[in-house]
Amino acid sequence: MHTKRKMWLLALLFVGLSACGGEGEGVADAAESLDTSTAELNTAIYNRARNYAAAHPTRDGGTWDQWCGSLMWRFGQFPESSARPSAIEAYHASTRQPYSASQAPAGAFHWWDIGSFGHVGLDLNGGGTTVFMATRKLAESWGNAIGINSVSGYSAQSGARYLGWSLDYAGSVIPDHGPLPGGGGLPRTSTEDDGIPGPIYYKRIQTVGRRDFGYTGPIDGVTGPNTEKIRVRITARELNRRGGPRTSAQEDGIPGAIYWQRVQTVGRGFGYTGPIDGIPGPNTYKAEHRICGYAVNRAF
Image 1 (cartoon, rainbow, N blue to C red):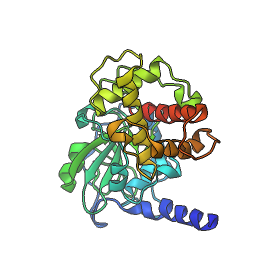
Image 2 (image 1 turned 180 degrees about the vertical axis):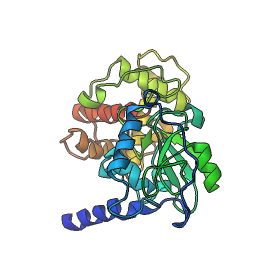
Image 3 (image 1 turned 135 degrees about the vertical axis):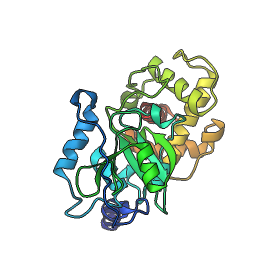
Image 4 (image 1 turned 90 degrees about the vertical axis):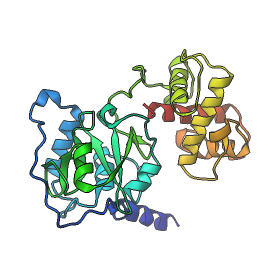
């Protein structure tokens, strides 16, 4: 059984990730070029992408065309849990931000609806002006259907409908991405690592809660009934992203047996070693905080 699962995962990662857009193989790269020649204006993410394309101008000896999700996954060195068979499925597994493309930071993922499989690209400098992607509809080619375009440029050339952007690709992020608009410059919470909640953890929960779940209280890092309810909803959303059975706590913030079973199951990846019985205790609560810490660290 283990061997069959491994073979399935390999098929997903190296074959299924091909689906992207609906662009024809015979479309030539556009002649237009973006002005990215001033090195000091480029981020470290841009420089890594440029080096990656130089090292991988082809995908396993062939074209990158139709492999946009594969490019994101490989460049980001993301785990198997973030692998999806198409860009549009990765989009639905990511958290779209309620901001315009011009507000996207470096390290954000831009998404389009095109064909059956969608399209995705990585913002290298912020603002949607320099987006790393696998396609033949490029403003600047760095190889065989790999290079950069702007959000507006790709949309115009392809006719694709722009869906927005996210900081994560199916739960994984570029570690040195830029700050989210209105994120307040909050540092990373160590609760993801140790399961111990603190002010930064709760400020992040309150910030995400205001953006995504209608939280209207202060962002002061002090927990209370409303913050706790938001914390459960954020945790439940992360649990639901990782499989089933689905917990309704994402909608109502009320933890039940399914919620706790999911915390314990997902918690295996966060150091939890107790039973999967849906009954919370100190170790389950610690895993819950670590899962929520993981989620809010990647929310902005």
